[in-house]
Length: 511
Image (cartoon, rainbow, N blue to C red; front, side, top):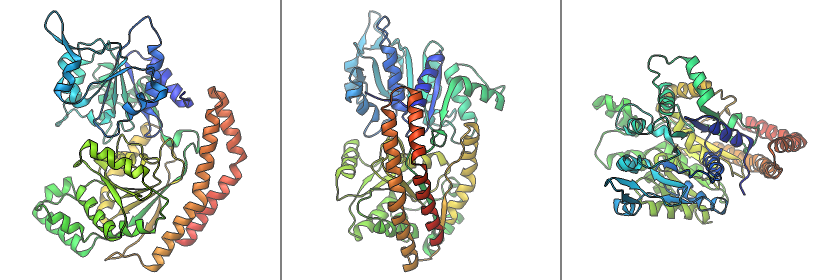
């Protein structure tokens, strides 16, 4: 039996209140999939009306929808996985008396498909009488311009008679128009003539349920500490950037890292990367009993870091778009279950969305990016419901990353202001500037001391909080749960505060 948090019950209630639909904007790791399946469970119990639900999702590995639907908690929900090659999908297609193609789902409650397949097969998918359509990770499809015309196609097909439920932790990536686009999709109205803040607030109140981890009951997740480590670029790396800037300035503006040179040259340049050397050195310091996820935007970077790990006799697995889905599933299973493999090297594209990596507790970020939500979502793969330990994030920052952050930070501020997100965890900044970058004895001692502080203080705190959450969830109704949680949290407040204070006092003494 699934026990819902209070905010999940509130989200379901709001879905039921609106005929047109709703943005379910729970932060990554707060349980959007579970919330949605509980909503579906509630409506299919009405046996008077057959209610078919279309769930549209990204194509991703270790699909959380299928895994959850196949669990004992949701065995009562029947679903058809409409995916694969056209030959696989044809078994669910049939022709009626007018020789028009339709989709047959028998006595299933859910038809599960992907955005690409929906776009390809939309002519006869739209003929199925769906009660509601659920769009997962919809922020990837809300642009009105560019290649992704999936959004425009969906707007024409799914009219006011179909409830549209949009799941996204990142409804705004760059500007407010993206959020207006989603509201236009849900309401089938146009807001081109008026896009005021007051209208946006009105639409959010009626057609959205937003909640960040920071606004959930304090300390429902174990602590997260994020540290910026400033790394100077090597002379060779600076030379490569400068040369490319002179040759191809426009491309440099679009992507500071993807320098336009023949294949192999980039790999050679990253072998001179102080960042890659620093990351390998840091991984060598982290004790064996911790799982570590290293994210980069670029596969070439991961190859270089992998070479460094191999030279250090550290076993690892990779997760990139170059691998088949079967291979990626295998790599994830090895990372999760093998005591000999503590490091996962993942591209943000392959590992930044749709994965549950809460069995890890260290995150290392090689890159900054123009869209800060992508970085946040990558971190939230680890810092999410089910995490039993405190999480440490190390962000490696060069001078070029600082410029990227100058541009991207206001985007996060815009999102926070609209959704009333407060108290984002401040980062503790550690500047390490060393041209060839090898950790000095002094720096290594300080970092090792910090890692020990995490073990000694924040992990026990995180485990204690997790115990309180588990115990509170067994209490039943919402008010009882909140009272129980608050009472037990207060009992342990002094211990928790002392541990956190000791951590930061000791940390400040180190640096």
